[in-house]
Amino acid sequence: MNKSELVSAIAESAEITKADASRALQALLDTVTNTLSKGDSVALTGFGTFSVAKRAARTGRNPSTGKALKIAAKTVAKFKAGKGLSEAVN
Image (cartoon, rainbow, N blue to C red; front, top):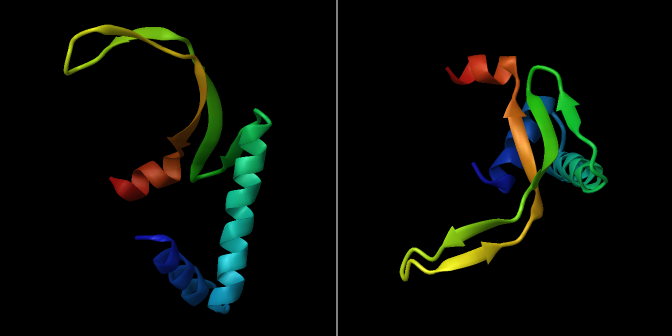
C-alpha cells in the first residue's frame, strides 16, 4: 500500500474527504518526524513506539574488495511494534 492508497483507505474508514485524510496523515507524519528529530519518542498504545537510537562508529568491509572502511556514527529512527499490531499480524 502506498501513500495515496493509505489516504483513500483513511478517507473511506473515517468517512471524510481524501483531502482531509491527506492533511491528517501529513500532520501525523510531520509530528512524528519533529518529535524524533528532538530525540523524543512517540508511543501509540496497541500500535507501537517510534524512537531514536545512536549507532556507534564501526569498521566495515567493502563486499567487492574486502577492504576495511570506517562507518561513521549516526542517529537512526526505530519502530517497535506494540502487542495489538503484533497479534493482528500473526
